[in-house]
Length: 219
Image (cartoon, rainbow, N blue to C red; front, side, top):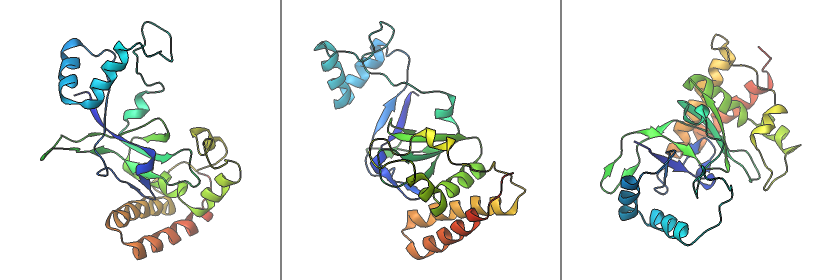
């Protein structure tokens, strides 16, 4: 119940996260009990390396008795919201995509669908509805927003952290506004076409997104 599919920054493309590229998972628990540790130690090479490092006296980054040898900070309710818009940091361009749940393959079977968790170099913005998430994703992938971002966020290690939203004013999503609803639908179409590799249809949608975002007005 505590295993979740994990994605890395290099899985990202425009409108798409290559979830089947490799099978990675992450484990969320305040404490790994002895029984769980034994199971993971027997089945997973990485977990055996974790235990080996622990016994070898690896220095902890956070020197507190309550913090495990390996731990993740800045995990909250937003991490598990139903829909999240994600993009890689430390890059040269913004490539956003919407993620939700994913059924990860394990051998010849697939695990039950679970929340996809981005790793620590992936920026995450959480939403409760797919419509709002896709609207926001369309705006972030537009030419206007990406050019604005490049004007103040340098390529490389400091590129596109969550703080960029302090300098990019995305109007609040209002479903009743036709242009916002259209942007949401266009993002859904872009995700579909990106998954299929339909470049021609994708470019048509992206062109319409760019035109609509230019004309967006605050709610």
